[in-house]
Length: 314
Image (tube, rainbow, N blue to C red):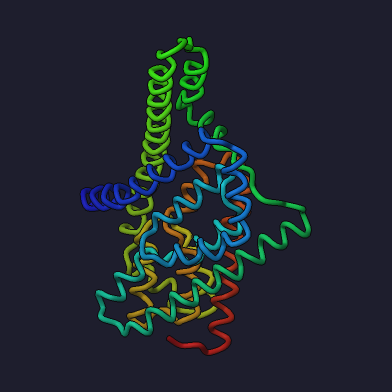
């Protein structure tokens, strides 16, 4: 069992590495590029962030939630965009449905509900924070992530700025060298961030995977299937576990008839892959991280109870 958990944890984590690296690479490029122009671009796209984020989250790959958490920690996207991605993230639900050869319409209906909830909640959250707490468009502060990770990219920038500039024809040569060194600094910094976050994800994924294996799916079914309302609260709590096994268990229990529709929706809305885990690793504001996690959990429970009360079926 231990070997299986280790193998699954490694495979699940390795799938996230390209997403994390590309995200950090883009963020480092943003930090090293012309700040005003890039910040203006982010500002114009900020209001539509929850819409775009929720649609991206519907793609069956939990890496998008990790990307969203990293971008939020760097001040690139709003909290509404992050929440929208987490709520709409499909994670392992899609392959489980397809493996059971369930009707495609049933699968699309659930995905559509998650996307709509993500868009509505994300937009309302951003609007509320803007109106009540005067939270405006986020300002990128990717250098803060670099400082906390000790990636030494600031040293690279200082070295570049202090390098002597030759005159005449030598200017072109120096300019080319400076440009190449800058690219190397960006790649190195992105790689350092990726390795650090990947190691953290691997450790926590292993611990939660081991917990799920020890509990067993039968015990989880007994815990969730005895009372519909309690099952909704517990399913959302299980969904917060930053491991693909959480969404797999919730989906399997639903398809086996153990979980009702509302409980399943609550669990899958809260199941944002490793997005919240990456948030705790990259964002130094612990109170903010806890508040976002609690908010996602509350949304999952409320929507799950509303679905149960309405008698909605998929």
